[in-house]
Amino acid sequence: MLLGIDLGTSSLKAMLFDPATSAIVGQAKVPIEILLPLPDRAEADPEGLWLAVLQALAELRRGAPGAFAAIQGIGLSTIFPALVPMDRDGRALGPAQLYCDHRARAQAERFAAAFGVDELERRTGNRFTPGTTTLPGILWLRENAPEVFAQTQVFGQIETYLVHRLTGQFVVDASHQSLSGLAAAGDELHYDPAILAAAALDMERFPRPVESTHVAGTVTAAAAKVSGLPVGTPVVAGCGDAPLSTLGGGVCEPGRLFVSAGTTDCLMISASRPSGNPVFCNIHAPVPDLWVVNGTMSTAGAAVKWFHEEFLPCSLAEMTGWAETAAPGSGGVVFLPYLQGERTPWWNPQARGVFFGLGLTTGRAEACRAVFEGIACGWRQIVGLLEDECGLRAPEVVVVGGGSANSLLNSIRATLLDRPVRAVSCTEITSLGAALIAGIGAGVYGSAQEACANTENLRSSQVFEPVAAWREACQRSYDTYVRLYPALQPLFDMQEN
Image (cartoon, rainbow, N blue to C red; front, side, top):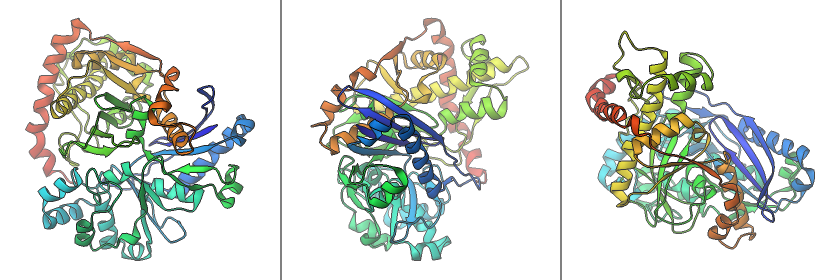
């Protein structure tokens, strides 16, 4: 039996998976809280997240005690990056700084300017930006929380913290290292000495980098006492949620176009090497010698949630129903879904959401549809950039996650992308990926390819085709969409955080 734990932005999920029958035998879900104490901050309480893990494990143990007692390996998927300063005993010294936290913008700009922006991006293969890169958050702690900085023995990730709670070991996997700002692209299992020297940081204050499937340690007696897990169960290092979703979705070779759609949408092409283009996030995959070239929409799913819960408010089903009554093109209304800055392709934390083209004939239905169409326009823009960079055109787009379940949105996506969108019906694909890396690490599977082949039965899907009658109106919306940000950028940059 394999245990997969998936820490997302709204909940923590856990799955018991039987590799002998390729069946999910137990699932649990616990809500978690993301804290937004200031406009430029996004945090989580590490201790609260650990308690959510324990609650999910308790639910699994009650529901399937026999399967729970037979766990052979444990894998974790986590939101990332999520910087956690820890003392020598693994206690968190403050909240986790999440990927959408922009507090360290000044520190990022100063360090990049001193090191050389082009050279820093050449080395790491990624844009050096607060939140999405870990190092700026560490520099912020040194300047703004010197007592925390001084007490910190390990600058880890939320993955590091949770694995330590289970095993007593400090590790970080290669996917997290890709976005640390501390490792060279393609050499994620080592820290870059030049960057460490420029930041005046000691390598001994960082966790040991390993592959996602590497067994970090085994469940300790102390962890077993509070969790009920069997003592000595292997725990692998884990992986960031977006790249791990590719493995859960069956991707273990280059050349696949794959989207993990949730609060944030990650549009990824699997590749045999990092692209080297910092417009994208270049991330080591959980499969050896595989990377994902990732274009990220920061608040795609979050924009839908905000609109139907805060702006209207109503249920998602009601929002979708109203959108279905609007004509394609939303009556000329175009929505920019940049509610908390945007990453690909702009990398501007100052960008904000916009409704453009409102008129006296604009109704609730048009606004609802415009939100969906804006997300689909963002997909088209990013997919075009990804395919140009990687030199391919994928025949279809495979989408997983909570954001893959809306039929109207999938049809709009297919129309704007001019190709089928295949929505995988298993919504817990990242939990499955976590179970699979546990199985690889524990020796249940001989390879990622074997793990993917043996779980193909879980990846049933529904295909959404482009709607010919929508093409012309959607094209007009897209033509406006791609012009809006360049026109508004000077105004965005004038805004306070």
